[in-house]
Length: 551
Image: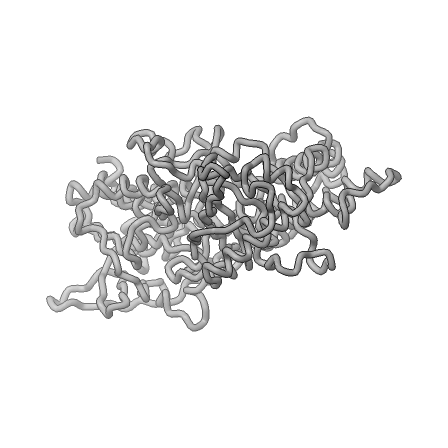
Protein backbone atom coordinates (compact mmCIF):
# COMPACT_ATOMS: atom_id res chain seq x y z
CA UNK A 1 0.00 0.00 0.00
CA UNK A 2 1.11 3.55 -0.68
CA UNK A 3 1.42 5.41 2.60
CA UNK A 4 2.47 8.78 1.18
CA UNK A 5 0.99 10.60 -1.76
CA UNK A 6 3.74 10.70 -4.42
CA UNK A 7 4.51 14.00 -6.08
CA UNK A 8 5.20 14.08 -9.82
CA UNK A 9 6.66 17.19 -11.43
CA UNK A 10 6.70 17.48 -15.22
CA UNK A 11 9.23 19.87 -16.73
CA UNK A 12 7.83 21.36 -19.93
CA UNK A 13 4.25 22.03 -21.06
CA UNK A 14 4.63 20.83 -24.64
CA UNK A 15 3.00 17.83 -26.27
CA UNK A 16 4.93 15.22 -24.26
CA UNK A 17 4.52 16.97 -20.91
CA UNK A 18 0.83 17.72 -21.29
CA UNK A 19 0.07 14.21 -22.57
CA UNK A 20 1.78 12.75 -19.50
CA UNK A 21 -0.05 15.20 -17.23
CA UNK A 22 -3.39 14.42 -18.84
CA UNK A 23 -2.90 10.68 -18.37
CA UNK A 24 -1.62 10.95 -14.80
CA UNK A 25 -4.37 13.31 -13.72
CA UNK A 26 -7.31 11.50 -15.31
CA UNK A 27 -6.13 8.13 -13.96
CA UNK A 28 -4.82 9.00 -10.50
CA UNK A 29 -4.54 12.73 -9.84
CA UNK A 30 -8.27 13.38 -10.00
CA UNK A 31 -8.69 10.67 -7.36
CA UNK A 32 -6.10 12.40 -5.16
CA UNK A 33 -3.76 9.43 -5.38
CA UNK A 34 -0.83 11.60 -6.44
CA UNK A 35 0.17 15.26 -6.48
CA UNK A 36 0.87 16.66 -9.93
CA UNK A 37 2.62 19.79 -11.12
CA UNK A 38 3.71 20.97 -14.59
CA UNK A 39 6.42 23.65 -14.62
CA UNK A 40 7.02 25.57 -17.84
CA UNK A 41 9.89 28.01 -18.37
CA UNK A 42 7.99 30.05 -20.97
CA UNK A 43 4.85 32.14 -20.76
CA UNK A 44 2.64 29.77 -22.77
CA UNK A 45 1.88 26.10 -23.17
CA UNK A 46 2.60 24.15 -26.34
CA UNK A 47 6.39 23.97 -26.56
CA UNK A 48 7.33 23.56 -30.21
CA UNK A 49 3.65 23.78 -31.10
CA UNK A 50 2.80 27.43 -31.60
CA UNK A 51 -0.21 28.56 -33.61
CA UNK A 52 -0.17 32.23 -34.53
CA UNK A 53 -1.79 34.69 -36.94
CA UNK A 54 -0.35 36.60 -39.88
CA UNK A 55 -2.31 39.22 -41.86
CA UNK A 56 -5.63 37.56 -41.17
CA UNK A 57 -4.65 33.91 -41.61
CA UNK A 58 -4.02 31.24 -38.99
CA UNK A 59 -0.47 29.89 -39.32
CA UNK A 60 1.87 27.54 -37.51
CA UNK A 61 5.22 28.78 -36.27
CA UNK A 62 6.25 25.29 -35.20
CA UNK A 63 4.65 21.87 -35.72
CA UNK A 64 2.57 22.01 -38.89
CA UNK A 65 1.57 18.62 -40.26
CA UNK A 66 -0.27 15.56 -39.08
CA UNK A 67 2.04 13.02 -40.71
CA UNK A 68 -0.50 10.45 -41.88
CA UNK A 69 -4.01 10.21 -40.50
CA UNK A 70 -4.30 6.43 -40.20
CA UNK A 71 -3.85 5.61 -36.52
CA UNK A 72 -2.48 9.02 -35.55
CA UNK A 73 -3.48 10.05 -32.01
CA UNK A 74 -3.16 13.70 -33.04
CA UNK A 75 -5.64 13.20 -35.86
CA UNK A 76 -8.01 11.41 -33.52
CA UNK A 77 -7.97 14.30 -31.04
CA UNK A 78 -8.37 16.86 -33.84
CA UNK A 79 -11.44 14.97 -35.04
CA UNK A 80 -12.94 14.75 -31.55
CA UNK A 81 -12.59 18.47 -30.88
CA UNK A 82 -13.70 19.53 -34.39
CA UNK A 83 -10.41 21.23 -35.22
CA UNK A 84 -10.15 20.05 -38.80
CA UNK A 85 -12.47 22.68 -40.29
CA UNK A 86 -12.52 26.43 -39.93
CA UNK A 87 -14.31 29.45 -41.38
CA UNK A 88 -11.08 31.42 -41.00
CA UNK A 89 -8.34 31.03 -43.64
CA UNK A 90 -5.45 28.88 -42.46
CA UNK A 91 -2.20 27.38 -43.57
CA UNK A 92 -3.77 24.45 -45.39
CA UNK A 93 -1.28 24.58 -48.29
CA UNK A 94 -3.70 23.17 -50.83
CA UNK A 95 -1.45 24.78 -53.45
CA UNK A 96 0.95 21.89 -52.86
CA UNK A 97 -1.57 19.67 -54.61
CA UNK A 98 -0.79 21.51 -57.85
CA UNK A 99 2.14 20.68 -60.08
CA UNK A 100 5.07 22.86 -59.02
CA UNK A 101 6.73 25.30 -61.37
CA UNK A 102 10.48 24.68 -61.34
CA UNK A 103 12.59 27.65 -62.42
CA UNK A 104 16.37 27.82 -62.67
CA UNK A 105 18.47 30.84 -61.80
CA UNK A 106 18.34 33.28 -64.67
CA UNK A 107 14.63 32.71 -65.20
CA UNK A 108 14.51 29.43 -67.10
CA UNK A 109 11.36 27.41 -66.60
CA UNK A 110 12.19 23.67 -66.54
CA UNK A 111 9.77 21.28 -68.15
CA UNK A 112 8.67 17.94 -66.75
CA UNK A 113 10.88 15.90 -69.10
CA UNK A 114 13.90 17.33 -67.30
CA UNK A 115 12.59 17.47 -63.72
CA UNK A 116 10.63 14.22 -63.44
CA UNK A 117 13.47 11.71 -64.07
CA UNK A 118 15.53 13.35 -61.32
CA UNK A 119 12.53 13.59 -58.98
CA UNK A 120 11.72 9.91 -59.59
CA UNK A 121 15.31 8.92 -58.92
CA UNK A 122 15.38 10.90 -55.69
CA UNK A 123 12.06 9.46 -54.52
CA UNK A 124 13.16 5.90 -55.28
CA UNK A 125 16.45 6.40 -53.46
CA UNK A 126 14.67 7.79 -50.40
CA UNK A 127 12.07 5.01 -50.51
CA UNK A 128 14.87 2.45 -50.53
CA UNK A 129 16.66 4.21 -47.67
CA UNK A 130 13.42 4.17 -45.66
CA UNK A 131 12.81 0.49 -46.35
CA UNK A 132 9.81 1.07 -48.60
CA UNK A 133 8.85 -0.75 -51.75
CA UNK A 134 10.20 1.02 -54.82
CA UNK A 135 7.66 2.09 -57.39
CA UNK A 136 8.09 0.98 -60.96
CA UNK A 137 9.58 3.81 -62.91
CA UNK A 138 12.31 4.99 -65.19
CA UNK A 139 14.84 5.22 -62.33
CA UNK A 140 14.07 2.08 -60.30
CA UNK A 141 16.69 0.03 -62.17
CA UNK A 142 19.44 2.18 -60.68
CA UNK A 143 18.19 1.59 -57.16
CA UNK A 144 17.86 -2.13 -57.80
CA UNK A 145 21.40 -2.18 -59.16
CA UNK A 146 22.60 -0.49 -56.00
CA UNK A 147 20.66 -3.00 -53.89
CA UNK A 148 22.32 -5.90 -55.72
CA UNK A 149 25.83 -4.56 -55.33
CA UNK A 150 25.37 -3.54 -51.67
CA UNK A 151 23.25 -6.34 -50.28
CA UNK A 152 24.91 -6.19 -46.88
CA UNK A 153 24.22 -2.50 -46.44
CA UNK A 154 21.84 -2.93 -43.50
CA UNK A 155 23.92 -5.60 -41.78
CA UNK A 156 26.94 -3.55 -40.86
CA UNK A 157 28.57 -3.87 -44.25
CA UNK A 158 28.67 -0.10 -44.69
CA UNK A 159 28.85 1.45 -41.27
CA UNK A 160 28.55 5.21 -40.90
CA UNK A 161 27.03 5.60 -44.36
CA UNK A 162 25.08 8.82 -44.58
CA UNK A 163 21.85 9.44 -46.45
CA UNK A 164 23.64 12.21 -48.34
CA UNK A 165 26.38 9.88 -49.56
CA UNK A 166 23.84 7.26 -50.57
CA UNK A 167 21.80 9.77 -52.56
CA UNK A 168 24.86 11.04 -54.40
CA UNK A 169 25.83 7.46 -55.31
CA UNK A 170 22.41 7.15 -56.93
CA UNK A 171 22.89 10.34 -58.93
CA UNK A 172 26.34 9.18 -60.08
CA UNK A 173 24.82 5.87 -61.16
CA UNK A 174 22.16 7.75 -63.10
CA UNK A 175 24.78 9.81 -64.90
CA UNK A 176 26.90 6.72 -65.49
CA UNK A 177 24.04 5.11 -67.37
CA UNK A 178 23.92 8.12 -69.69
CA UNK A 179 27.53 7.83 -70.82
CA UNK A 180 27.86 7.83 -74.56
CA UNK A 181 24.80 9.98 -74.99
CA UNK A 182 25.34 13.42 -76.41
CA UNK A 183 25.44 16.16 -73.80
CA UNK A 184 22.59 18.51 -74.61
CA UNK A 185 22.54 22.19 -73.85
CA UNK A 186 19.90 23.22 -71.38
CA UNK A 187 19.72 27.02 -71.49
CA UNK A 188 22.21 29.84 -71.65
CA UNK A 189 24.87 29.10 -69.02
CA UNK A 190 23.18 25.82 -68.07
CA UNK A 191 24.09 22.37 -69.41
CA UNK A 192 21.63 19.53 -68.96
CA UNK A 193 23.90 17.78 -66.46
CA UNK A 194 24.36 20.91 -64.39
CA UNK A 195 20.59 21.39 -64.31
CA UNK A 196 20.06 17.78 -63.24
CA UNK A 197 22.62 18.16 -60.47
CA UNK A 198 21.03 21.32 -59.14
CA UNK A 199 17.50 19.86 -59.35
CA UNK A 200 18.82 17.00 -57.23
CA UNK A 201 20.32 19.54 -54.78
CA UNK A 202 16.94 21.29 -54.58
CA UNK A 203 15.31 18.00 -53.56
CA UNK A 204 18.05 17.43 -50.98
CA UNK A 205 17.29 20.85 -49.51
CA UNK A 206 13.64 19.90 -49.12
CA UNK A 207 14.72 16.68 -47.38
CA UNK A 208 16.86 18.71 -44.99
CA UNK A 209 13.76 20.50 -43.73
CA UNK A 210 11.96 17.16 -43.26
CA UNK A 211 14.75 15.75 -41.12
CA UNK A 212 16.29 18.90 -39.55
CA UNK A 213 19.74 17.64 -40.61
CA UNK A 214 21.51 20.76 -41.84
CA UNK A 215 23.61 18.52 -44.09
CA UNK A 216 22.35 15.13 -45.28
CA UNK A 217 25.94 13.91 -44.99
CA UNK A 218 25.33 13.87 -41.22
CA UNK A 219 22.07 11.85 -41.45
CA UNK A 220 22.54 8.15 -40.70
CA UNK A 221 21.47 5.80 -43.49
CA UNK A 222 20.93 2.62 -41.47
CA UNK A 223 18.55 4.31 -39.01
CA UNK A 224 16.44 5.81 -41.77
CA UNK A 225 14.51 2.57 -42.33
CA UNK A 226 13.39 2.49 -38.67
CA UNK A 227 11.51 5.77 -38.93
CA UNK A 228 7.76 5.28 -39.25
CA UNK A 229 4.93 7.42 -40.58
CA UNK A 230 1.24 6.73 -40.34
CA UNK A 231 -0.58 5.72 -43.51
CA UNK A 232 -2.90 8.10 -45.29
CA UNK A 233 -2.62 11.72 -46.31
CA UNK A 234 -0.72 14.41 -44.45
CA UNK A 235 -2.86 17.36 -43.37
CA UNK A 236 -2.74 20.54 -41.35
CA UNK A 237 -5.14 21.46 -38.55
CA UNK A 238 -7.62 24.15 -39.57
CA UNK A 239 -8.22 25.58 -36.10
CA UNK A 240 -4.53 25.34 -35.27
CA UNK A 241 -2.17 22.79 -33.77
CA UNK A 242 -2.41 24.58 -30.44
CA UNK A 243 -5.96 23.29 -30.04
CA UNK A 244 -4.48 19.82 -29.46
CA UNK A 245 -2.37 20.83 -26.46
CA UNK A 246 -5.13 23.09 -25.16
CA UNK A 247 -7.43 20.07 -25.17
CA UNK A 248 -4.86 17.97 -23.28
CA UNK A 249 -4.44 20.72 -20.70
CA UNK A 250 -8.17 21.39 -20.31
CA UNK A 251 -8.70 18.54 -17.83
CA UNK A 252 -6.06 19.90 -15.44
CA UNK A 253 -6.94 22.23 -12.57
CA UNK A 254 -5.61 25.73 -13.19
CA UNK A 255 -3.06 25.41 -10.38
CA UNK A 256 -1.32 22.39 -11.94
CA UNK A 257 0.43 24.29 -14.75
CA UNK A 258 2.89 26.95 -13.56
CA UNK A 259 4.20 29.23 -16.32
CA UNK A 260 7.41 31.25 -16.12
CA UNK A 261 9.05 28.62 -13.92
CA UNK A 262 12.38 27.82 -15.54
CA UNK A 263 14.27 24.95 -13.93
CA UNK A 264 17.97 25.73 -13.50
CA UNK A 265 19.11 22.55 -11.76
CA UNK A 266 17.79 19.07 -11.00
CA UNK A 267 19.31 17.42 -7.93
CA UNK A 268 18.71 13.70 -7.72
CA UNK A 269 19.93 10.71 -5.71
CA UNK A 270 22.11 8.30 -7.66
CA UNK A 271 23.40 5.15 -6.02
CA UNK A 272 26.84 6.80 -5.84
CA UNK A 273 25.61 10.24 -4.74
CA UNK A 274 23.00 10.24 -2.01
CA UNK A 275 22.24 13.16 0.29
CA UNK A 276 19.21 13.60 2.45
CA UNK A 277 17.45 16.93 2.88
CA UNK A 278 15.52 17.49 6.11
CA UNK A 279 12.52 19.80 6.19
CA UNK A 280 11.45 22.13 9.00
CA UNK A 281 9.57 19.29 10.70
CA UNK A 282 12.62 17.07 10.75
CA UNK A 283 11.28 14.76 8.07
CA UNK A 284 13.32 13.47 5.14
CA UNK A 285 12.30 15.29 1.98
CA UNK A 286 11.51 13.77 -1.38
CA UNK A 287 14.52 12.57 -3.40
CA UNK A 288 14.50 15.11 -6.27
CA UNK A 289 15.10 18.79 -5.66
CA UNK A 290 14.39 21.35 -8.36
CA UNK A 291 16.03 24.78 -8.37
CA UNK A 292 14.24 27.55 -10.29
CA UNK A 293 15.50 30.77 -11.86
CA UNK A 294 13.81 32.86 -9.17
CA UNK A 295 15.73 31.08 -6.42
CA UNK A 296 12.82 28.94 -5.27
CA UNK A 297 13.00 25.16 -4.87
CA UNK A 298 10.56 22.29 -5.18
CA UNK A 299 10.80 18.67 -4.07
CA UNK A 300 9.41 15.69 -5.96
CA UNK A 301 9.38 11.91 -5.90
CA UNK A 302 9.46 11.78 -9.68
CA UNK A 303 10.34 14.29 -12.37
CA UNK A 304 9.46 13.79 -16.03
CA UNK A 305 11.93 15.81 -18.11
CA UNK A 306 10.46 16.78 -21.49
CA UNK A 307 12.88 19.53 -22.53
CA UNK A 308 14.27 19.42 -26.07
CA UNK A 309 17.36 17.46 -27.04
CA UNK A 310 18.98 20.82 -27.73
CA UNK A 311 18.53 21.85 -24.11
CA UNK A 312 19.82 18.47 -22.91
CA UNK A 313 22.89 18.87 -25.11
CA UNK A 314 23.56 22.24 -23.50
CA UNK A 315 22.83 20.68 -20.11
CA UNK A 316 25.66 18.15 -20.38
CA UNK A 317 28.28 20.73 -21.27
CA UNK A 318 31.18 20.96 -18.84
CA UNK A 319 30.05 24.38 -17.62
CA UNK A 320 26.44 23.34 -17.06
CA UNK A 321 25.01 22.20 -13.74
CA UNK A 322 21.61 21.16 -15.08
CA UNK A 323 21.86 17.79 -13.36
CA UNK A 324 23.51 17.17 -10.00
CA UNK A 325 25.09 14.70 -9.90
CA UNK A 326 25.75 14.80 -13.66
CA UNK A 327 23.91 12.35 -15.85
CA UNK A 328 25.61 8.96 -16.16
CA UNK A 329 27.88 8.31 -19.10
CA UNK A 330 25.48 6.04 -20.99
CA UNK A 331 22.94 8.87 -21.06
CA UNK A 332 25.33 11.70 -21.95
CA UNK A 333 26.89 9.70 -24.79
CA UNK A 334 23.48 9.11 -26.36
CA UNK A 335 22.61 12.78 -26.01
CA UNK A 336 25.90 13.76 -27.65
CA UNK A 337 25.66 11.34 -30.57
CA UNK A 338 22.10 12.11 -31.63
CA UNK A 339 21.49 15.01 -33.98
CA UNK A 340 19.34 18.05 -33.26
CA UNK A 341 18.81 20.57 -36.02
CA UNK A 342 17.21 23.92 -36.71
CA UNK A 343 14.31 24.35 -39.11
CA UNK A 344 12.60 27.71 -39.48
CA UNK A 345 9.59 28.95 -41.40
CA UNK A 346 9.42 32.31 -43.13
CA UNK A 347 6.09 33.93 -44.02
CA UNK A 348 6.04 36.86 -46.45
CA UNK A 349 3.05 39.00 -47.38
CA UNK A 350 3.28 39.70 -51.11
CA UNK A 351 2.26 43.22 -52.10
CA UNK A 352 -0.69 43.10 -54.48
CA UNK A 353 -0.34 44.42 -57.99
CA UNK A 354 -3.11 46.46 -59.54
CA UNK A 355 -4.67 45.72 -62.90
CA UNK A 356 -5.67 48.57 -65.19
CA UNK A 357 -9.19 48.48 -63.74
CA UNK A 358 -7.78 48.95 -60.25
CA UNK A 359 -8.50 45.43 -58.98
CA UNK A 360 -5.89 43.36 -57.20
CA UNK A 361 -4.15 40.83 -59.42
CA UNK A 362 -2.55 38.05 -57.41
CA UNK A 363 -1.97 34.36 -58.04
CA UNK A 364 1.42 33.09 -56.98
CA UNK A 365 2.40 29.58 -58.10
CA UNK A 366 3.91 26.74 -56.09
CA UNK A 367 7.48 27.60 -57.01
CA UNK A 368 10.56 25.37 -56.86
CA UNK A 369 13.93 27.12 -57.19
CA UNK A 370 17.11 25.80 -58.80
CA UNK A 371 20.30 27.76 -58.16
CA UNK A 372 23.85 27.59 -59.52
CA UNK A 373 26.25 25.70 -57.28
CA UNK A 374 28.61 27.35 -54.86
CA UNK A 375 31.62 28.91 -56.51
CA UNK A 376 29.99 29.24 -59.91
CA UNK A 377 30.80 32.48 -61.72
CA UNK A 378 27.29 32.39 -63.14
CA UNK A 379 25.61 33.05 -59.80
CA UNK A 380 23.63 36.27 -59.51
CA UNK A 381 25.70 38.41 -57.10
CA UNK A 382 22.70 39.92 -55.34
CA UNK A 383 20.89 36.69 -54.44
CA UNK A 384 22.03 36.10 -50.84
CA UNK A 385 23.64 32.81 -49.84
CA UNK A 386 21.02 32.04 -47.20
CA UNK A 387 18.28 31.90 -49.87
CA UNK A 388 20.18 29.57 -52.18
CA UNK A 389 19.55 26.45 -50.10
CA UNK A 390 15.85 26.96 -49.68
CA UNK A 391 13.95 24.88 -52.19
CA UNK A 392 10.49 26.35 -52.58
CA UNK A 393 8.16 29.28 -52.11
CA UNK A 394 4.39 28.91 -52.19
CA UNK A 395 1.15 30.41 -50.88
CA UNK A 396 -0.22 29.00 -47.63
CA UNK A 397 -3.44 28.32 -49.54
CA UNK A 398 -4.31 28.64 -53.22
CA UNK A 399 -5.35 32.30 -53.44
CA UNK A 400 -3.39 33.66 -50.49
CA UNK A 401 -0.90 36.50 -50.82
CA UNK A 402 1.02 35.03 -47.87
CA UNK A 403 3.98 33.00 -49.10
CA UNK A 404 5.92 30.41 -47.12
CA UNK A 405 9.49 29.21 -47.39
CA UNK A 406 11.34 26.68 -45.19
CA UNK A 407 14.96 26.94 -44.01
CA UNK A 408 17.25 24.40 -42.37
CA UNK A 409 20.73 24.38 -40.88
CA UNK A 410 23.05 27.36 -41.20
CA UNK A 411 20.56 29.22 -43.38
CA UNK A 412 17.86 28.83 -40.73
CA UNK A 413 20.17 30.29 -38.10
CA UNK A 414 21.19 33.13 -40.41
CA UNK A 415 17.54 33.93 -41.06
CA UNK A 416 17.02 34.48 -37.34
CA UNK A 417 19.67 37.20 -37.31
CA UNK A 418 18.33 39.19 -40.27
CA UNK A 419 16.10 42.24 -40.22
CA UNK A 420 12.83 42.37 -42.13
CA UNK A 421 14.17 44.70 -44.84
CA UNK A 422 17.15 42.49 -45.55
CA UNK A 423 14.84 39.49 -45.88
CA UNK A 424 12.37 41.20 -48.22
CA UNK A 425 15.15 42.68 -50.36
CA UNK A 426 16.74 39.26 -50.76
CA UNK A 427 13.50 37.58 -51.78
CA UNK A 428 12.53 40.40 -54.14
CA UNK A 429 15.87 40.10 -55.90
CA UNK A 430 15.64 36.33 -56.10
CA UNK A 431 12.10 36.22 -57.49
CA UNK A 432 12.79 38.96 -60.02
CA UNK A 433 15.79 36.97 -61.25
CA UNK A 434 13.73 33.79 -61.58
CA UNK A 435 11.12 35.64 -63.61
CA UNK A 436 13.69 37.43 -65.76
CA UNK A 437 13.29 35.21 -68.83
CA UNK A 438 9.79 34.00 -67.98
CA UNK A 439 7.56 36.86 -69.06
CA UNK A 440 4.94 34.37 -70.20
CA UNK A 441 5.02 32.84 -66.73
CA UNK A 442 4.60 36.22 -65.08
CA UNK A 443 1.68 37.04 -67.33
CA UNK A 444 -0.04 33.69 -66.90
CA UNK A 445 0.06 34.04 -63.14
CA UNK A 446 -0.78 37.73 -63.02
CA UNK A 447 2.27 38.45 -60.93
CA UNK A 448 3.87 41.37 -62.63
CA UNK A 449 1.69 42.26 -65.60
CA UNK A 450 4.59 41.24 -67.81
CA UNK A 451 7.24 43.23 -65.94
CA UNK A 452 9.53 41.08 -63.83
CA UNK A 453 11.97 43.72 -62.72
CA UNK A 454 11.18 45.57 -59.51
CA UNK A 455 7.60 44.30 -59.41
CA UNK A 456 8.02 41.89 -56.50
CA UNK A 457 7.55 43.64 -53.18
CA UNK A 458 6.58 42.44 -49.72
CA UNK A 459 4.65 44.27 -47.04
CA UNK A 460 5.37 42.14 -43.97
CA UNK A 461 7.42 39.16 -42.86
CA UNK A 462 7.19 36.78 -39.93
CA UNK A 463 9.74 34.10 -39.06
CA UNK A 464 10.20 31.42 -36.46
CA UNK A 465 13.37 31.50 -34.36
CA UNK A 466 13.75 28.07 -32.78
CA UNK A 467 17.54 28.01 -32.86
CA UNK A 468 18.08 31.08 -30.70
CA UNK A 469 15.22 30.40 -28.28
CA UNK A 470 16.93 29.28 -25.03
CA UNK A 471 13.97 27.07 -24.14
CA UNK A 472 14.48 24.92 -27.27
CA UNK A 473 17.82 25.67 -29.02
CA UNK A 474 16.58 24.00 -32.18
CA UNK A 475 13.62 22.28 -33.79
CA UNK A 476 13.69 18.48 -33.70
CA UNK A 477 15.98 15.49 -33.53
CA UNK A 478 17.47 13.13 -36.10
CA UNK A 479 19.72 10.08 -35.98
CA UNK A 480 23.15 11.34 -36.91
CA UNK A 481 25.98 9.35 -38.45
CA UNK A 482 27.66 7.56 -35.53
CA UNK A 483 24.40 7.30 -33.66
CA UNK A 484 21.60 4.74 -33.96
CA UNK A 485 18.08 3.93 -32.88
CA UNK A 486 19.61 2.41 -29.74
CA UNK A 487 20.48 5.92 -28.61
CA UNK A 488 16.83 6.94 -28.87
CA UNK A 489 15.96 4.01 -26.60
CA UNK A 490 18.71 5.06 -24.22
CA UNK A 491 17.20 8.54 -24.12
CA UNK A 492 14.00 7.00 -22.74
CA UNK A 493 15.64 5.09 -19.87
CA UNK A 494 14.76 6.48 -16.43
CA UNK A 495 17.24 7.22 -13.66
CA UNK A 496 18.64 5.75 -11.56
CA UNK A 497 19.22 2.87 -13.95
CA UNK A 498 18.41 -0.57 -12.61
CA UNK A 499 16.68 -3.69 -13.83
CA UNK A 500 14.11 -3.70 -11.03
CA UNK A 501 12.21 -0.52 -10.15
CA UNK A 502 10.21 -2.05 -7.30
CA UNK A 503 9.75 -0.54 -3.87
CA UNK A 504 12.19 -3.03 -2.35
CA UNK A 505 15.13 -2.14 -4.58
CA UNK A 506 18.26 -1.32 -2.64
CA UNK A 507 20.02 1.98 -3.06
CA UNK A 508 18.45 5.25 -4.13
CA UNK A 509 14.69 5.60 -4.77
CA UNK A 510 13.55 4.37 -8.19
CA UNK A 511 12.19 6.38 -11.13
CA UNK A 512 13.42 9.74 -9.90
CA UNK A 513 14.04 11.17 -13.36
CA UNK A 514 12.07 10.04 -16.39
CA UNK A 515 12.54 11.32 -19.92
CA UNK A 516 9.89 12.08 -22.55
CA UNK A 517 9.77 14.06 -25.78
CA UNK A 518 10.12 13.36 -29.48
CA UNK A 519 13.85 12.58 -29.11
CA UNK A 520 13.03 9.63 -26.84
CA UNK A 521 10.92 7.66 -29.34
CA UNK A 522 12.76 5.20 -31.59
CA UNK A 523 10.39 5.12 -34.55
CA UNK A 524 8.46 8.41 -34.35
CA UNK A 525 11.17 10.87 -33.31
CA UNK A 526 10.89 14.44 -34.65
CA UNK A 527 7.07 14.36 -34.61
CA UNK A 528 4.28 15.55 -32.33
CA UNK A 529 2.80 12.07 -32.22
CA UNK A 530 6.21 10.73 -31.15
CA UNK A 531 6.13 13.24 -28.30
CA UNK A 532 2.56 12.16 -27.50
CA UNK A 533 3.51 8.48 -27.35
CA UNK A 534 6.50 9.26 -25.12
CA UNK A 535 4.35 11.20 -22.67
CA UNK A 536 1.93 8.27 -22.43
CA UNK A 537 4.86 5.86 -21.97
CA UNK A 538 6.27 7.71 -18.97
CA UNK A 539 2.87 8.32 -17.38
CA UNK A 540 2.08 4.63 -17.70
CA UNK A 541 5.48 3.75 -16.26
CA UNK A 542 4.62 5.65 -13.07
CA UNK A 543 1.05 4.39 -12.93
CA UNK A 544 2.30 0.82 -13.19
CA UNK A 545 4.93 1.48 -10.53
CA UNK A 546 2.22 2.48 -8.06
CA UNK A 547 -0.31 -0.07 -9.35
CA UNK A 548 -2.61 2.84 -10.25
CA UNK A 549 -3.05 1.48 -13.76
CA UNK A 550 -5.22 -1.27 -12.30
CA UNK A 551 -7.66 1.17 -10.71
